[in-house]
Structure formats: C-alpha cells, structure tokens
Length: 414
View 1 (spheres, rainbow, N blue to C red):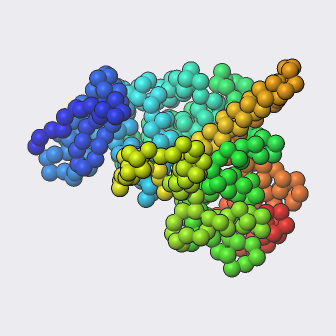
View 2: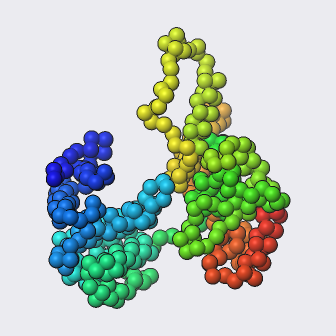
View 3: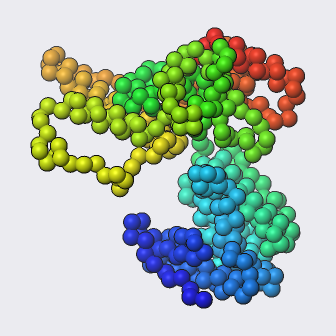
C-alpha cells in the first residue's frame, strides 16, 4: 500500500494529507505540530491496513498506549461524522476542535490513560492564560470530559480516568483570574434603524424578522416557504433545524402581521428555496450599480460575457457568520455616513460638530430585545414560549396553553 504524502495546500498555507477519499489539514506547513500530526496519521494507517476497516480503529493491543493526541485524533474523526448535517460539520464539531487545541498543547504527548485531574487543571489554566472567559472555560472543560467519556465508551481508556476528571470543580465567579463575560444586552432601536439603509433587502428583512419574532439567527437564515404554515391569521414557522432538535423538542415560531409584511416579498419562490439569498442580494446590487452608472460602457465591457461558473460565487443562503458580517458592514457604512454628515455640517456652520456614532450590535441582541419586551408586557411565561425555551418534557396541557398565549402575542405585537 502506498502511503500518502505530506503536502502543501497552497491556498491556505497548511499541510495536508489525503487518504480514504478524505482530506486532512494538519496545521501550518513545515511546523512541528503538522509533522507530528502527519506521523500520527501514518501510524494509524499502518495499524489499520492489516485486514481492518478503511476507517482506522485502534487494535486492542495498543489501546492503553494511546497518547492524548492520538485519542483526540480518533475522537475528532468520529465527531466529524456524528456532528454533521447536509451542510457538513456543525458548529459543535468546531467547538470540540477548539477545546482540544490547549489539551494537545499541554498534554499531547502524554498517555491518555495517565491523564488525571491535575493535568486537566493544567489545561484549564492554559485556557485562562489564553484570555478565555470563565463561563467559556467551564464549557470547554466539559467538552474535554465528553472526549474522555467517549473514550471510556469505546474502551480506549479505563473508567477511572473519567471519574477522576469529573472530580474537577468548575471555576467559580470571583475565585479565578479568568475574565467574566458581560451578559448579552439589548440594543436600542436608535442603533438598529441607521443600519437598515446600508444593508441588502434580504439582511434588512432578517433583522426586522428577528426583532419582531425573537427567532435565533440560525433559524432566520434557514427560512423557506415550505416551512411556513400560512393557513391561519398568525403564520407558524417550523425551522428544519434548531437548537433543541437533538433532544426531541419541537420549535414553532409565530409570525404576526408586522413580521408577515416583511417576509411576504421573499416567499414568492419555489417552496424549498431559501428566502434570503446572498446570490440574489449581489444580483440586485449589481443591477443598481449598472442603473446608476454615469459613463457609457466601452465596447469591450459590453462584449464581455459572464462566466457560466464564476470562480467565486455567492452562496444560496446566508449562514450565521455571513449574516453577522453583513450587519457589521452595515454598521461601518452607517458610521461613514455620519462622518460625511459631520463634515457637511462643519462646512455650513463653520464650527466643530460631533454626531454620535452607531454602537456595534449583533443578531443575538435582537432576540434579547424581543424577549425583554414580551417579558415586560406578558410575563415570564410569555417570553419563554415566544423564544422557544420550553423543554421537551412539558406536559400537553401546558403546551396547549403556551401555544394560545404565543399566538395572541404574535397577533397583537408581531
């Protein structure tokens, strides 16, 4: 069997190795970490080639000799498949990779069987020195426990290893140097409105939908006509993916008249197409630029044909990251417009004049706005059902009452 080579991936500058029809990125090309990762992969291929499956499994004879790095590699191979959907690996897989970085840095060469509470605390201290917030550190340490729980489940380490790690208490507020993350605050409407003229119609509609319904950013980007029940006075949106799906919970978002007016122009499409498309936003933006063009096109420009398959084509839908970046860009343009207005006023008035800048905000704050308003006007239960915080084991009696309340809230205010 020919072993795969250690190669340079030119566009990213990372080392890469390919085998089994999959590409594995190893880190910065030429770095000791990437070479160590390459050696580990070759070792696994050699262990797996004698009559074993294509996906490397650890032979019983070497289970107890696994290093932490090798254990992490096995876990991430499994997690990449388990925490995936039709769009590829989910954010949970990325969180695990992120958590395993300080683990490998502190204890990568040590035996996984010898990894105990003292070493976990050393990894946690590494996270603190990296500037991670206290709550974030506790979440990442819990993810590392889940790595070792998976290892126990698959008989890669003994159960006593996991029991030792469970003895490590979480970091307490005021008892650690890890910084505290400020709570997510609401955002005033005076900071939302100036951004709307500087984003695409798609992003503007998503902002207004979040503001009126309290849906998550990950839910608004997935909206399709086929997922919206428009038979009633209040529409019901059932996201194809949502935060509680793995627990068996259902999620229904109630869309009232105001939100319906924002959404309606984007429902005129095929039932399974995404309502909010960056590709459509770019096409509209290019058409507006052509219409506003003052100089005539040159013959060569007029004869130029668009590529059938552009090298860099916009996606068919936004994801949470591109949606957030679009808002950030809108904030930047809004502040530039304020600066331009300042200059114009100074020219006319002949004196210094400073206008307030738009404060940064994120999609999550729009959801907090909605929750705060509903709680103020309808109580804690109203906020809970509107934001979808009910657990899967809520009784049917309460579920019916919650649905009626959420529909009333959407009809009156959404």
